[in-house]
Image (cartoon, rainbow, N blue to C red; front, top):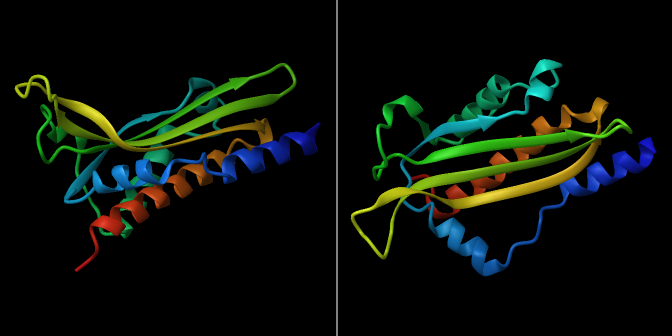
Length: 169
């Protein structure tokens, strides 16, 4: 059972869910001209926080460090009162459910929320996810910390998409 769970986890967390090329290109273009980001919502299930497997604080620190090392300006979310052209947010969400067999179902979402104006009513400015990745896997409890590496890899994919449309000068 352990080997099966490890193989499923390895496959699901290392294999990106396929996106159509057009969707990837559309998402990548939405990052053009992005000047800075706030690391916003970092959700970690209380089950993982309580047993010390993963914490929101360590994930937030990992993400902010990766962004800064890539030359992306990170700003504090509390500086954003309402959506504006300079208030883009990178959110990280982890969901986890354990089974009686000791196997955890884990989903991870990393997404960029940007201010968007509704076409039907241009007076409405709100946030919408313009770029995102999703991973799903099964893990044994002893492997929960590997989710941290999955998140780092997903943030690297964001950074690559960002740099593709915002080359360093």
